[in-house]
Amino acid sequence: MHSFYFALLNLLIVLLGYVLIKEKMIWQSCVMLISGIIIVDFIFLDDNAVIRMLSLIATTFTGMKVIAVAETYKGKVLSLRFIQWLAFAVGWAGMRAQPFETLGAKPLANAWPMVWFGVSRIIIGLLLILLAHGIVLLPVNAYLIYIVASVVLLIAFSLILHFGLLSISAGMWRLAGVNTYYLFRQPAKALSLTEFWSKRWNIAFSEMTSITIFRPLKNKIGEVAAMILAFAFSGLLHELALSVPVSSGYGLPMMYFIIQGVLILAEKIIMRRQNSFLHNKTISRLWTFFWVVSPAPLLFHPEFIRQIVWPLAGLGK
Image (cartoon, rainbow, N blue to C red; front, side):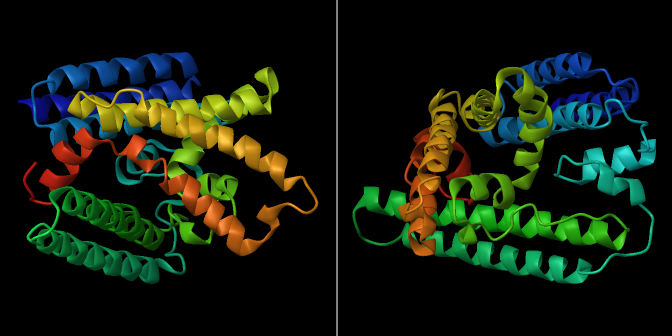
């Protein structure tokens, strides 16, 4: 019954969402999002943490798409037909609906390479999960085992979802004439935190925060304040995904994203200097890697690892 209620709620969000989009109803879309999150959290309140996480993420993304599309087409004629909206809302993780205006057109180039890229990443991810199963059997310090296995599992699940399933999705939509794209674009090549968060890592999230938070607010409160609020909003959404399902770690994901926002401001100041150390590509890559990874335990806190990551891999809590 919980699954039925969840499906019914998200179907309602999609159907009502199209009406809100057509009428450019932004604040009503926000109310629908908040209501949907509260309802789905109540439905799955006593369920397994993994189920709670997936249901909250799915409902949040569906609701955010309504807001993003309503904001995107504000002041414009809506050229997105209902069937195109439906395909975008339930079948694509990105937040830009415009590519789906060409749904049904001729297949686009680079579709199958995207699919095979995704398949290869899923295979690598599954092999890493098997490696983690072997690591936990090693006769060494238990805490060291926990740390190493957890890191391996986080990389494995990222490869399977972010670089695997989402790349396959992008390739398949391109076969249907939709100009979809990689949502994770070689993040290891980022030369700054700004580049990492805006152009390479989780483009869906950067699209979401840019469309719904940064762009509407930057002319009202200034670019700096709008950027910090955009990162705080990302932190809030990660609280819903990483802390609420396990009823623990509250405030830690928010702290991670506030740190990222502050570091980007510092980075911009440093980069203005003529002889800045960040003008060196090697150093800038190390800078980016360090500040993305070193605070990561705030994001992937212990209860999230124990109740979500290890059970998903078939390992004991």
